Image (cartoon, rainbow, N blue to C red; front, side, top):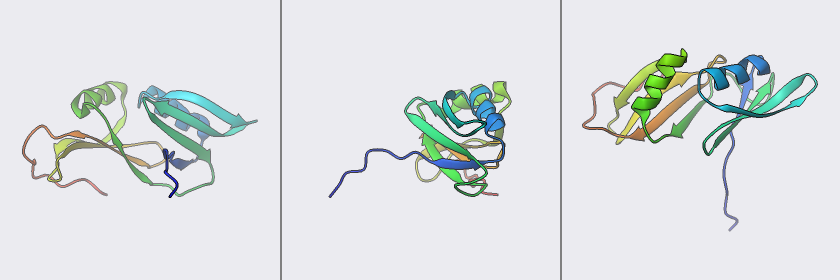
Length: 128
């Protein structure tokens, strides 16, 4: 059996430049590269995570992904300061994680997950 090594999601975006700017300025990613003239495909990264962004194709708006981080609460404070679109502040989930829900300008959702800090909060995960 062949081992898989990693996965890189590809998110469809309306405006590559605006999406890259949001990921860099609001979500703390770095721009790795863009391709095309004008650019219609690119990559942003933070830590071990890379996300491809594709203008006008390769996917549908509103995709979800789960990203695991060291400290959800510190990230939440950073995102509040940067003006990121936070759809749900950190909660302790019944499945043993602490999660917050963030949205990008194209409606894609990032579930930022880390270790639970206590008992479940009894608040459902916001899925709308």
